[in-house]
Image (tube, rainbow, N blue to C red):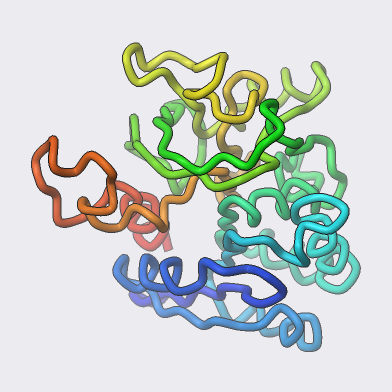
Length: 260
């Protein structure tokens, strides 16, 4: 593909992370087009002009009937064939927070056996029953095929969600785990091991799962926000460590742009 791959970021209907998401991709070397969801629904072939697609964070359709639910239903009804072709063409899909919720409810994640559009997992209300907004530490799983997270180990990232508890039936969970579908987990900063309880596991996710990829490694979603850690000074404790011009969240976007 071209050295300056093009990324399509869907906007509108309560999504609100387009500015920082676009800046992250552009800083990583990609070209970005922002498109209102309605415009893409009206002209689905617009997807195919791009090498990557991003579902951003926010509160699409006011989280009516559950976070990401309405958005996912409209996308499944109007974009199913084009999204299937997009993935089969070897392109990238990224979903962050509300975008991750949309990918799970669409069925693009976990995408077991490359069977998309058949939801088999869920992101439920946080165990604490409240919206959580603070920084967590995640560990990236080495055995995951995810192209976005290659070479990454640990990262501090902010969360902002009320429905982030990952849940799946035991048989589905086993298949996700055995296939390397878990890309990152919430961990205890002191030990680096998966966190079982609040606050290090902020929502009660099973197996401390914070993000997933499909079997190809090209569809990736996570609850924490890498686009919110683009400069070292974004971190709340930046004064306690060495000043970094670039925040760790950029590594995910650089991996993706490098792959393209």
